[in-house]
Image 1: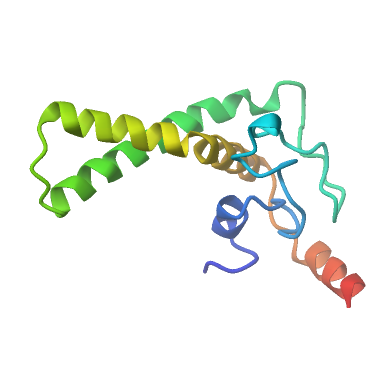
Image 2: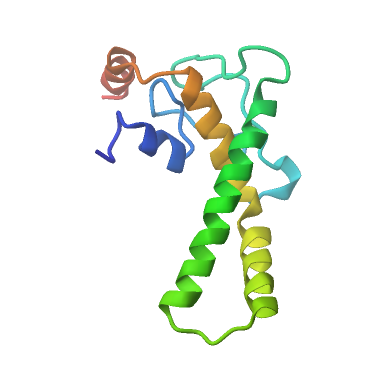
Length: 133
């Protein structure tokens, strides 16, 4: 369910949506010099990551949803741990969590967006694995 071949693997580990081998981003999401820059194509299978100019603008909508999910998760965790925080402290906690997670949220959102349009191809992944051996 979570290994190679699942969309969740590609999304969380920021791998190529087609082969699940190549890196999706040029650098780590927290490398602010190359902040969430997507590679032009997969270094392993050659998939062109951008279908058209401004392809990843749609990932902003996904980013909003992921940000809301993080905010809700922080709120639920505060309540589960029984922390006695007022509304202002809860708000500040959520904002801090969102600021700290922002680079990863942006990267995951672009990966989710790409996975809407590209599917895993087992035969390509198998060929890449055989070439490595």
